[in-house]
Length: 478
Image 1 (cartoon, rainbow, N blue to C red):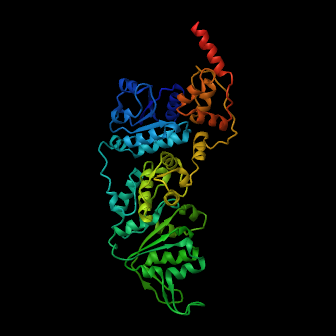
Image 2: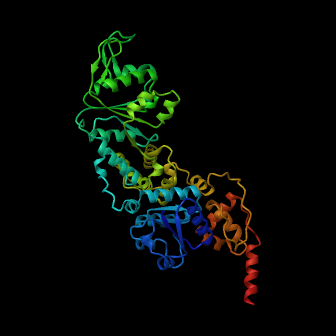
Image 3: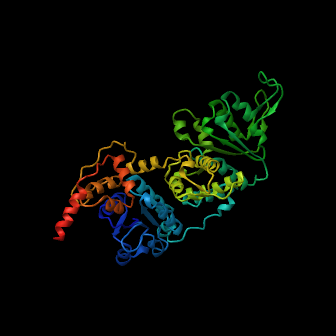
């Protein structure tokens, strides 16, 4: 069982986080400060340390060096974004803004523990093999465990002539993987032909792939070589093979089985030597079960599989990739040096990127075009940071979601307390005893941000809270 240490001075959020992680199968210990963490625990015994940025005594970032090779996840408020970014540059494995929901935290913990090499050492008793050199994968950037695993598989798959199936969401870079396989294969000096099956009309796909003889159909005024035949000796990459019509699938199956093709209108077959790489964002097994894809063809192309992770699953790779794409666009457009602002970094690392790397690339290109200063903001990226923050804070709830009823300040947090409701509950429990300034400081936000969140979440300000507080203070002084 993986062991996690939570370092947080707020008992409400610390207990809620402990129970959340315990429900997900982790052994959890607690501390209220850096000093307490060092005194009561051996940091090297843990698989992960989750620490608040602002702690009494010393900041949570002090644990980065004290924990050694144990990864440290920093929790921070949105108002402390610059400090969060700085903490990552100091060596924190990642940061997460609070309030946050259960899914965000559990996902981050699972990703960090699975990506960190300490897990492999603990389970196998030996250090993992050195990761392959990413510079040997032209055009592909990635340091997370999923990408290192992909690089390792490419290195093993490439020298063979076996058919490869590349799986991944749209925009993850499947064609780059196909090119890497080809460039590291024995066919590297030969032709690589890429075909997007979804971009060719159904009526033309067979003639494009297999070619045709003169007079085979109306308009066939001369014989034409197909793309499979043109790839002889090299590699054929069929992107979005799930969109291939059934008739073309039958012809493709014969090519894979027999290593030969027959042009449309011809009675003679031609032997071809072609290495096939296919890619799709669809579930071919489900399509085959529904009769929308030939099952025998699926088994033929599902020999060696390479899986590309979605961009949102790649952790710190997102920021690294964004900075690399920014360098490329600056050079391409001959623009002066630019950097990403803290808000842009927050937007990039918290946005879900449904379009993956392709969407990120276009966002960076748009930002370089629109920005005239030396710092790129999130607005130039086309990302609504406020909307992203609301979704994270509210857990995709509607703006008019009911506000939880106030509870006793001294009461221990409920078993099912949601971290996304921490802000609401804290304000409701403490607004009678704290001023707005004290509330904002405790939550790590500005007074303006506190007021805006009150308006957004529908939490009315208690107008008598300050007066009561002054009366209590006066009474105590007598």
